Amino acid sequence: MESATRIPSISAGFFPTKKLEVHFPGILYRAQTWNLPAIVPAAARNMRLRMNVAFSESGNGDQEESLDLRNGKGRWIHFVGIGGCGLSALAKLAVKRGFEVSGSDIVWNSFMDELHQMGAHLCIGHSGLNIQRGNELRYPDSLVVSSAIPPDNVEVLQANAAKIPVFKRDYWLGMLTDDHNLIAVSGSHGKSTTAAMLAYVLKSMGDDVTAIVGAHVSQFPEENVIAGLGQNFVLEADEYDGCFLGLSPHIAVVTNLEWEHVDQFPDEESVKKIFRMFLNRIKEGGHLILCGDSPGACSLVDCGGGSIRSYKSRGAVQVPESNSYTITTYGSSITNEWQASFIRPNSMGGSDYTLIYKGLPVSEISLQIAGVHNVLNSMAVIVAVVALFGDQTGILDLIDHMKTHLRNFAGVSRRFEKVGSVCGCDIYDDYAHHPTEISAVLKAARDMFPFKTLIVVFQPHTYSRLVALLDDFASALRGADRVVVTAVYAAREKNVWDVNGRDLASRIGGTESEYIPFLDSVVDKLVLDISDEPLREILVLTMGAGDITTVGPKLLSRLINMTQESCGREM
Image 1: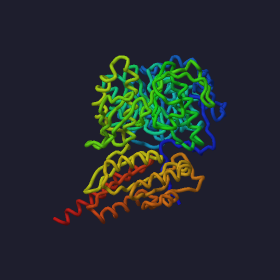
Image 2: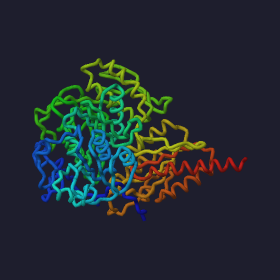
Image 3: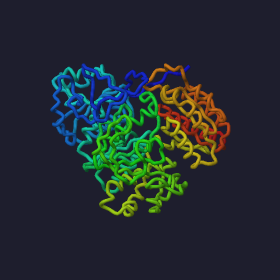
């Protein structure tokens, strides 16, 4: 039987659907509800009708034009679900731009620590009182809500009653980035790292960039935000809930495409359809950068970089003939315009590779972050910077300018992040929660620690994903020497499939595997096993998108204490 699992951030009581449902950006919580077809034609997508603005029933649509999101002096924004990585970043940016910021969530987390230090007024729990000040005489100028917030949220209802405009996150992002040169980084995997690396490189090169990333970045002053004053805006663009369909990027990056978010998308084809809708949002004369090694990404267009394409139709999505953009591909295959060749590990624990452009070697690139997947992420960054500045500066000079900054980028949190070491045991933590991500991280771990015994502790994230990809998970995890599978981190779901971590552990085969549902029990077991062979060279890798991240620090602390006690006895 699965253990009770802590509910992260806001839970909307979400139950998985059987079909893809796409919403208009910004539609939110009116008396009338919209039941849209599985795939909305792109022509309808382009309609910037007044109904797309997410004001309350009696709100004034003309307020859309009066919102200056660059200067918030004297105005108050309240964020519902502020603890999430997406909304916390928007809230931080609002603080930096002079807005008075408040917000609510059901649990406190690390994103809220930084907001509190920045002066935001934060509330735990949802209440109409959270959006009232001065004996109910003052209300926020706007409410921004997470995709996870249900229509009957008490703060949303209170805002509607008080005629306060209410925005969903996707529409707010669209308004926020509309007057910027938007570089939107999308894809099934690698979005956070690629967006963070791109923003870091641009900032280091002297560009006054603004950026929002869905993860902690130690090299960002505000962790997941850079609040610049220039025109360039780097954004991690998420397909979940159709969030990226409110954007109009000048440059769109697609790192890869696979079946992911199985609670929203019934199959890979439905993922492709929504990505094609996103590509239709690229501004005319813009640029599409995609990984040519990804069959899913290539299926969106006819790969063969460098030319300008004008699409009349693409599957179920009608694309205006005037909506043309340049397409550039990158990857390790020689069919790509930009190619990574001779990829090898380096002394920093990362990778070196030869960068090839149109068949000719142009530079040697060095990274401190591990894995071939990060080589590909760095290539997306290189191509994006060239797309931005290649007309102003020679490509070779531009790449030479980038090299040091690519080398200095230290990565983002929970991406093969070192927790610590004790004796011969290294402990790392990673966010991987999809079979492809697991395979990529395990390969990076093997390259970095070829002689260590690799123990993986995996916490499945959501029942729907586990059911849909069960065999793929089992296959990916066979790359470890030993696997411990924990209880499923349910997040927004209930277990209507009667599946649990034991089902995965029993399927792995060929690799020692066991099911230990409780995280504290996992720590106890690992401490016991590792202490039996204190000189054994071991790599413990915790993986998953839930609270599995607590295992590494607890394990490290217990092992250090045991080592110190052992030393004390010997003395």
